[in-house]
Image (cartoon, rainbow, N blue to C red):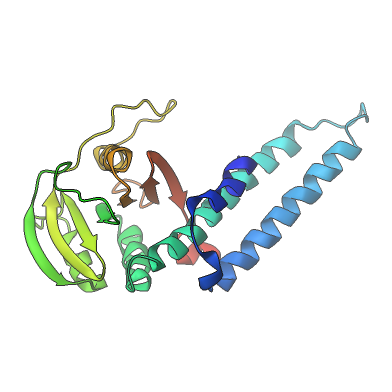
Length: 219
């Protein structure tokens, strides 16, 4: 998992243009804390009266937490390169997560997506949190499909994405997550997912699914 945290630098994200100080500070403190615990584990390894199992379990959990924080940090940096509305997207994700309103949001990058999706309803409106939340409000005819965003505009809604056929360990993925992975396997799109069941937020990129933390998780 530590390798996963380090590998975020391979996403070609220009993090020097990002200023997400709380996330940076949390990452720095978390990684330093994990490093200290690993060093301590090495020091007591030869002590027959000390059992490392509980310590390793705690370190593993902290790795998972730091992976989520790293994903959140780089996601915000990554979005800022393709839309000026990345802050609005973060606000929207937070609200959808809080309310457990399922959502599937595609950020189109360089690759055209027409050949990979079943087109839904044309929207062609400015991207705002209020509009996105309205689209994904339960009962709205458009809420089951995916929203396509290009630049600062909501292009369309209720789009149907291809589903992945990959087996993701022992995880049972819902339709939204399988759709997010399916499109990210076929294009360079970045796909945001909010789980209706848990409220958890993830994003898919290059055929991989990454959990992220929401703003309240940083406090």
